[in-house]
Image (cartoon, rainbow, N blue to C red; front, side, top):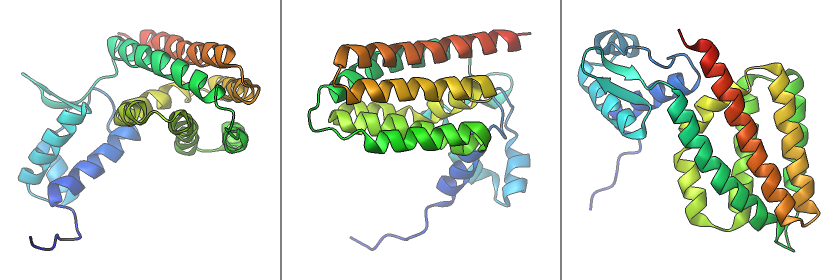
Length: 219
């Protein structure tokens, strides 16, 4: 076998740039992706852009359409329901499993909550989303179930896009971290049933908020 080149292939780097733009909302849901314009902006030929689009289509971030070509995958109401139905099931189980652990130290979660509350009062949206993802990933990993952790990690790009919608409003930013704090205290008190109930309601509250926001944006 030959040594591998340290630098990622060009289509991978193009996909990374596009992925970052999609997750940051620079490329908004439903936006048509013009390959020639994007290639010119990135200073590459159309071929790596075409290959990058195929990679992002496999991730569910880009969708091929018959008339418009490639577009940024919309965040439609069915996608919201599907993803948050998954989160409700997984996160309720995860919370109960962590609360049942006698050796679990909630201190790191409390630290994330404090940083999250500070970010909710005046931090950037990107930092707030990072902390929210850190909180949930810490719970997944603490559950000890590697399959659930990897399944949810695979959904993170979609979760991140939806978090940008839920955390965009100042009111829900505060509510989300109040719910996180309540969940941590239920886990610290070793109350699996209460932890599960809080985690499930947290997912349902986010789903309700998203569905209400998406309805407002309907034409």
